[in-house]
Image 1 (tube, rainbow, N blue to C red):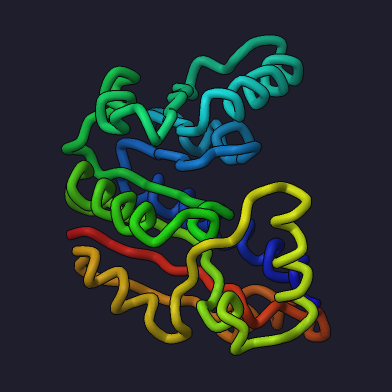
Image 2 (tube, helix red, strand yellow; image 1 turned 30 degrees about the vertical axis):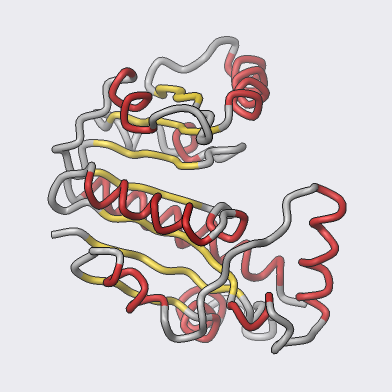
Length: 227
């Protein structure tokens, strides 16, 4: 089905995005919907000197902190955990209380997050990032094509994807039409945008090492830049 191929590529691309941003002078790194994301720990040495914030629902973050504490013996001091109940809390207040500075160039990641939000929440999140970060900030997220959600695309990947909502109680709500991610990001106020559909991801990351490995054609990755 190519799902594992996409997830492998997604991990690689997000890794490179974060490390590139750090090397180019980012002052902060915000992991939105952090879940079990391990980049702040895997790349602790390369992210030294950058303020790292993990934003997540309080219950999800509590479970994450238990695992991290068990692995390291204690919570690492270089990560700032920001519990946020989005229906109640003000995100900027929560981040600011943890030491976030809106004027600094900041890396934002939303891995496996956007597709589970409704359209208004996606737009509001992107607006928040644009309005509350410094010049040279950027955001990366993966998304699903709208045609996979409304039935215009029918294949095994879509069937599998839709079945998960009954298991995890997290329906997939948001998609972007194929070819429209860049215009969507520019409409959200980002100065420059890049879209990475499956073919581009395959050529960049899979073709050089595993020609026959499939990658799903209903997922893509987008990056927005703020000057």
